[in-house]
Image 1 (cartoon, rainbow, N blue to C red):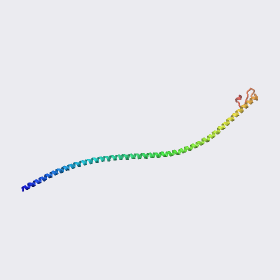
Image 2: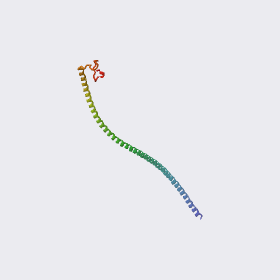
Image 3: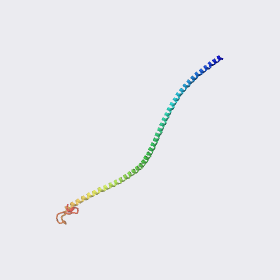
Image 4: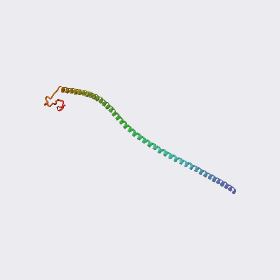
Length: 172
């Protein structure tokens, strides 16, 4: 049996060597697969970090947009309330303008009526001036006639000064 054992030993040794080679190859393949997997995992980590950064940036931008939208809504609400106040002021002014317009019409009517009365008074004044001028002319004529008639110093003490009711202190 010696030969048989040695042949058997050779086969076993050969099989063990084959298995060692296969194991080395398997371990080498496993190491290669692990390295590939590490590369893939690292790439996935980078990709996920990148996506996380993008997501964080997008969330940040979204928050900025929301905050800006809130500010715009607040500004819009504020401007709407200001516009509402301005509109009510315009309505008040519109009512005042109507009142002012009515007052202007009343004032125009008063001016027209006073103008007519002033014209009437001016006409009366002209008539009175004409009457006074006529009266002064008649008075002057009367004085001249009295002087021509020779109204002498009778009744004034004989001092030769004519005394008429329209002269001051009895002198012309």
